Length: 516
Image (tube, rainbow, N blue to C red; front, side):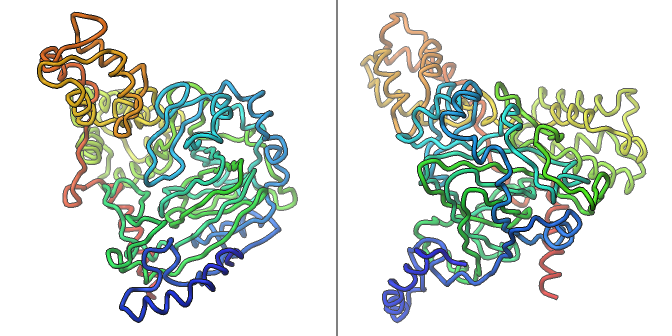
């Protein structure tokens, strides 16, 4: 189903397209994604929430999207979440920020630092700024959100990995990408336009390189102007195009590509991510009493109180456990050596004495007796709390989840270039000028707090200005925390992680089934 404005665009531009085709230029060249053909893939829409068994068999298991019109109307957030209510009840909670245009925006600065704001502060400025909340939903806000009856029981409701909040003043735009987990995304305010691409078209999306361990993914294309001469395989993609309105929910399967535009002056959505389960276990499900359940009555693997280090994007420990079980079954035992090898291959850019010590502590969590090996039964006996502690030790926090994100986000080379452009040989640089340039320069755009840290480490004799010679002598030390966080991508031929192999096998199996 195409929205009205999309149909009008097709009609108005049809003559132009014909001319372009005569010149050998592909239809839709340098137009927004979808210009290469009309949307021709239908997605089922329903006003009735399916029961958990139907939801599993028809949608989750075959990885088929479903639009649930009006499904969020019984969620208190739909009526409660005005700007005034959010500020009054949750204004002191922290949220993570991104820029509205995922492909091009810089990470904005909030009241708590780069990419971090308090919700109350965000609400005061978000209509005038490029800020967009893409954050874990703080746990106190769970009480206003309900889990749909189709996934509120069994191992779908029992394996909610995380819950995320999306909020903007409209005009936000994502890249074409896929997510690692199944999700139900409910729109509480505003309008969103979703374009969907089945994962079977992944060979044609011109995917950005990333290590195979990253089981999400994105396309290289500019979704506003798709260069079909540079990315010709896009023309082979069939897609869906739907509008979602306040109160609507969407089931989006793991690995299903999508591109989203948000509209209206207040746009708010909540997304519940649940595990990549292989079978449905209906324990706790009641055919006679199916109901939505408040989120604060459910267990969420990675919940977050609204302050401190986030756990957004942390690993699914249930799938991690399944991976360990497979190793133990195949080799007869899961050993400490296998564990260390897996993680050092998975994250070669992290190899250091500190990281190896962290991994050893992580192993001790699941092997408290120090045997150095676990049987299949011992792995199966590991409970969720133990696995969470194990994961926190073995998987370093994503920098964007911390208040030290600035060290990782801003390139030390850009800071160095900025400083030397300001203090020429034999010259001086004042403290105020440096702070102003560090916080406003488009290639840096950091915070005053971190600018002051750099200034202090440049160790000027005079507190108000620094000389060229002092910069030359001290800049390496001043930027040490930024330089230490520079990472290198792992070339495809060097990515041997067991997780990546499992994921690759899963994708290849899916493609083969589709071909049959």
